Length: 69
Image (tube, rainbow, N blue to C red; front, side):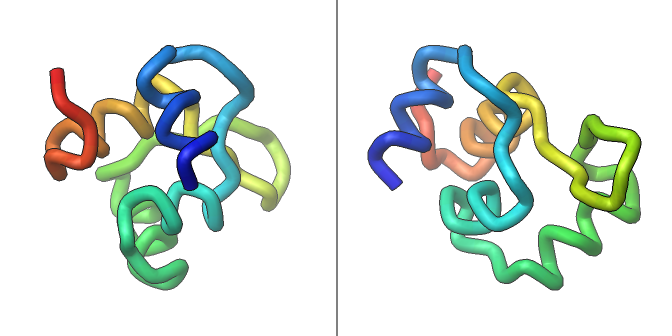
């Protein structure tokens, strides 16, 4: 998880998989999928394998106070 948090702090790197995003936020996979389908969390990708852009993951992590501004 430390490497994921470091990617979020830097604001660069490949988009996070749904499972990585769930690990960082502490949410379950079903909860993350509900957030994605409701439009609360934006994703990228044209296939079923949706990914969360680093900037979006960082936004959510800051809102949850996992990351500091």
